[in-house]
Amino acid sequence: MCGVIGLLSSGEVLPILYEALTVLQHRGQDAAGIATCSGNHFHLRKSNGLIRDIFYQRHMKRLEGFMGIGHTRYSTTGSTGSNEVQPLYVNSPYGIMFSHNGNLTNYNDLREELIHKQCRHINTSSDTEILLNVFAHELQKQSTGAGLTPTMLFNGVKNVFHRCQGGYAVVALISGHGLLAFRDPHGIRPLMIGRKKNTQGDEFMVASESVALDAVGFEFLRDVAPGEAIFIDRDSRIYTAICAKKTTLNPCLFEYIYMARPDSVIDKISVYQARLLMGKQLAKQILKTIPIEDIDVVIPIPDSGRPAALEVSRELKLPYREGFVKNRYIGRTFIMSEQSERISSVRRKLNAMKTEFKDKNILLVDDSIVRGTTCKQLIELARESGAKKVYFCSASPPIRHPNVYGIDIPSCKDLVAYDHLEHEIAVRIGADQVIYQKLDELVKILKTLNPNIVDFEASVFNGIYITGKIDQKYFELLQKSREKS
Image (spheres, rainbow, N blue to C red):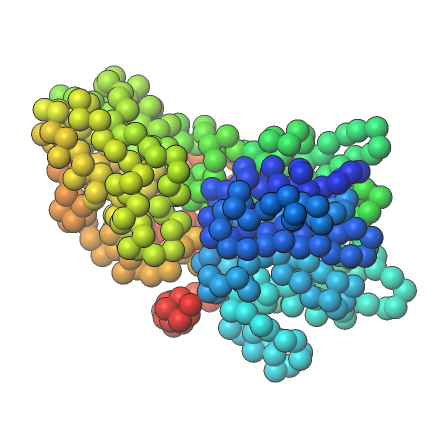
């Protein structure tokens, strides 16, 4: 999971790109980069680390231009080396700077084609470079020597959709021409467009989440449709086309559960509203499972567990208390790259207030249970603080399958719920009982927020991969590639 931004402005884009990118820091903590274009010249700064640690005044001075793209990285394929950091660049045709959020599931086949059949040089293990070179190759085929047109770009994207399987949202700079953005035919990864009007003409921004538009004063226009490409030229003229033969809207369910900020709106669904509904539905499941008189207090796991916990408390008419205090200077443990790092970070990240736990039966509510690392240690903290019983509730269903579309869940063996029933999971994490959301009920209530959604991409819960061609051999190759990196 990554964050992407593209901007075409009437003035210098760097200050706006920087501010918007910091708002998307939660989508990736491994690395970040910004590329700008002035005339036909690209300017680039990228490095491993947080945004605040990468960009200094000396970098700001040379990142000139009226259009640019930004990226914050959370690595799921490829290594974590500096050569994997985005944006990435190819000089032919035209000169292209490129960033994307997501994963290609036919990476290996595409790599072989590019190297051995199309004579493209691949320098990294990143699927971003594969996607970039597929696009560059397809765009080169459209070249007539008479200049670049929107139709040529859209034909190139059309062929990308034909060749590239997976979930992806892309932003690209075409040197001297403009800004291009497109979204995979299933709409798995989010992408939206906003506009700011001023006396010098319209400015346009595309971003992974609406909160990035809000932060820099852009008006949200709409979500980029599945299979759609948008091109904005240097004169702020906007061109759009549906480039995929078949499209469906299947946004990633995990965006609403955990990845996105609560103040974002994705595919016409407020993330915060979705999380409130998750809590409301979860309360019904709790009533079926635990005697209400056996619960003294509802305590959330901050931050993404709060909306659900509030609704659980309200629906069950139980006291709501903040029991854990969060250290704001520790990153999101789910998106840390190593399990040992996650384990050491949990207790540095959250500290228990003993007065809220002592001699009480506690109902802990979190957004999800993935590896079990965080919840196991938090249950230990609750017991050390004097809790008599600890019930642990997940606002999401059990996560039992790998993710192949851009979330770092590459192997079943990492998942605490894999091949285990709920009472077995409770033993593994040290809870008196574990209560999960039901997938069918969750999907049903979220569809009420946007009936146009055909279905959600929910493979981590149901093992159904909507792009197809995902089998055990694929997972074995995926695991090997991650071990090498």
